[in-house]
Every structure is written in structure tokens, then in C-alpha cells.
Length: 222
Image 1 (spheres, one colour):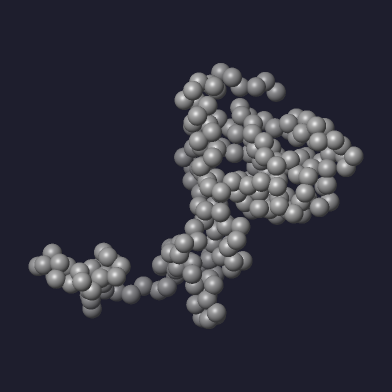
Image 2 (cartoon, helix red, strand yellow):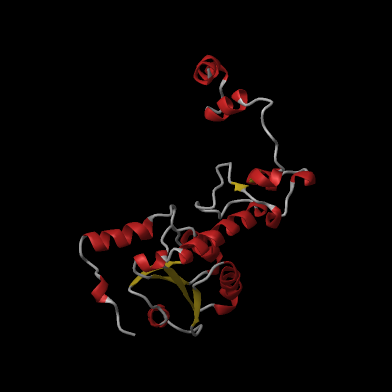
């Protein structure tokens, strides 16, 4: 009966299985409050009645193309608290299941010679899938970048900031930044650049291990 009904009604479907469920269970459902399936698109609504405090939401539904596992640099400000909440849960799950212990620690050294793109660069690092990540910022412009770093320290763990002399050369800035790194692997990026997907670190470490360019006994002494 159910299969025949679905087959006969498929020509009316727009949302696939969701339409099938909605038609088959019509008038046989119990509606739950909106906080039990709150879609993040409502955070951008111009109707205040559709806004919900995230602390009151039971299930947060990232329904649109705006996902917290993507680069959120250009997302509207109203969406950012939901994105950050997801990432906090992600970090909690990584800790709970000790995912960081399954891969070598990777330190990303960010060389900051211009603060204007730093937030963009940090965002592209913090949405990475790699579960054992530490970020060190090295800059000769501490006044300009300190506020940006502090914002990210508040939102995410494992951000360190190394202040060097404003008169330091690039090589001196790099050397002092490297002195603050720890863990088994280190990679370098300029704050002027960013990653356009969330897989580079996973791919990098996988490549090193697959080609035996790194192994667990190669930890650096500190």
C-alpha cells in the first residue's frame, strides 16, 4: 500500500523522500516546537519572531549552502554564532574520542606582514578537518594584529601569538616564530594567503606518511 502510494505520487515530488513522508503521514503527525529543528536560514530572517537564542535550540539544522565545515569568511554576521557553535561541538567530539592522538600534531606558522588579510587566513585554517592543529602567528606589527588574534583565541583553542621587534627582518621573524612551534610537523603560510577547501592538511600528512617521508619516531626534540 505504502509503496504503491509513493509510486503514484512521485510526479508531484519536489523534495524526494521528504515529500513522500509528508504525503504518507499527512494528518498523522505531531508537530514539535521550532527549536527542535531550527534551520539556520531563520537567523537571517527580517522577522524577529523567527529568531531563536541558540541556547534554546535542541537541533540546529544547517539547511542552506552555508555550512560550518566550509569557509565562513563571507557569511553574514547573523550566521556566525551558529557556525562557531558547530565548531565548538566538533572540538568537543575530537577531545571526547581522542582523535588528535590518531594523527601527528601539525603546527601552522602564519607569517604576518600585513594584518588586512589575517582574519581571512585564520578562518581558512580553522575550518580544516585536521583534528590535531596548532597555530602560531609571528608578526612585526603586534598592535595591528593582536586584536584579531585575541578574537580567535576566544573562539578556538591552540592559537599562539609571537611578538617580535618591529625592526626585525623577515628571517628573524620566521626564526622566532619557528622557535614557538611544537609538535611533529610544521608548515608555513603567509597571512596574505588562504586555503580554499578544508582538506589540505589531511592530504599533506597522508602524503608524508604514504611516501614514508615522516614517521612516528621522527619527533623533534624540544
